[in-house]
Length: 115
Length: 114
Image 1 (tube, each protein chain N blue to C red):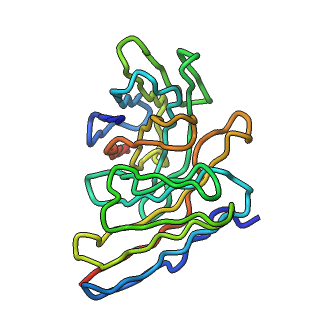
Image 2 (tube, rainbow over the protein chains, first blue to last red):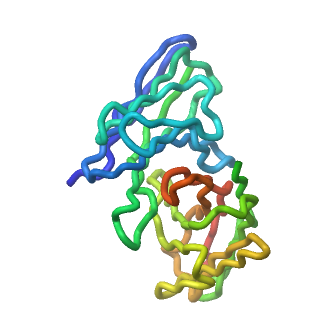
């Protein structure tokens, strides 16, 4: 049971490039989310999903796309990278079926730098 | 949508003393309030949570209180230890499912002085 796995751990992009951050969970969680963490700004929700085929926007969705074709995977796509997207990105998953603990389990993060 | 405010942004306490972090939320429909601890360079980890039908919950040295009328909740850490030094985040849900869309506060950096 690996939990929530994010790849890559580090990435440097040039302005205008596109890329996909990968996220996979093996806990059969129905809920998955992407957050970005910037210094002094906490964790801001980018997109979230309540199940396969269902996604919705969070607080800061512009410049990012997501899809949820399977329960396990929730990739985050940067369409045209900008320096303002330099951040640490966390994927997280949870389930209402887990009983007492409804809280998110986070992946280890992806540190993205856009130059 | 939901907005969560957290205070203070930094907190320094003497080892052995208590620490209190306070949060307010805006959406009266929110019903789940988790707290996360993030050590330097690591992922956030859930330390305690509370649901809206409960006013207080305790787990060893940490406790959380919730005042639904005032829309605020607090984290209390007693007998602080050096390993309590970290950034703490409060959060609240604002989605139709309690664990689907969690909005975080901006964090409190807690330092424990020896």
